Each structure stands twice: as C-alpha cells, then as structure tokens.
Image: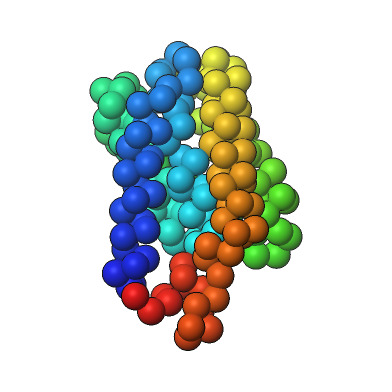
Amino acid sequence: MTIRRLALLAVLIALSAVGSLIKIPSLVGTPALDSAPGYFAALALGAGSGALVVAVGHLLTALTSGFPLGLPIHGLIALGMAGCALGTALLRRVAGRGVASAGGVLLNGIAFPAAFILVPGFGTAFFAAMFVPLLVASLLNVGLAWAVAATVDRLGLLTKGPAGRTSGEGAPR
C-alpha cells in the first residue's frame, strides 16, 4: 500500500467519522451518513478499500450512539456492511457504477437487514421497525457515493498517472 492510498483511506475514514454524527432517526439510532465514503471507496477504489471504510464507519456510528445493540452485534453488522461494500465493488467491475449503486442499496438497505429476521431477539418486528430508516440511509449513502464517484471519474481525479496505474491502485507518490 502506498502512502498516497493510505492517506486517501484516512481521509475517507475521517469523513465517515463526520458522517457518523449525521443520524437518520430510527429505533436504534445507528443509521447515519457514515457509509457514503465507504461506498465511494467501493465504487472508485475497489472492494478492500470500500469494505474497510464502511466497516470502520459503522463502528464509529455505533460508538457515537453508545453501542445500543452491544459490541458483538455491531461487530457483526460492521462485517455485514463490509460484505455489502464488497458486493457493490464486484458489481461495479462487471456491470458499471449505476448497477453497482442500485445493488449496494438493495444489499445494505434490504437484504442484509432482512438477515436479522433469523437472529433470535430481533425477528420480523425489528426488521419492520428498521426497514424505512435503513433504506433511507442506504439511498442517501450510496446516492452520495455514486454522485462523488461520477464526478471524480468525469474530472479524471483518479485517472492513470505517469506509470500507467490509477492513483487509487498504487500510483507513484
């Protein structure tokens, strides 16, 4: 990992920390604008970067909310959200940014939360109570990420550098 990439990830994680303070009202209080930087990373930098930033972003939101579901559950949620970012990045590779963004909303806003129906103590009632706030948060986060990634692409901010590599993929410092 280059210093440039490490610095970019640090900035995205810092932006996730800021986003963690902008909450979407909900039963639990953890849906927030924390994952937009992570979904941007998934769309523009790749799966590993997106997964890392999204997971850290969720943990920061859980921290600022007092870990209302407990640290182990929030750890699992962070891993699940990392999986959603991974899926978004993989869709970006095969189907483009628009399809990947729609997939990210579906994964993070519907499919992953629906998995909690099977978790004892959560069930259908929890999913029903969290459905709208999580879907709204997913639409906002992924929508912001899509808009920024499109702008970055259009302006060529992560285009090929002098060594023929993209700046997000190990370009020279």
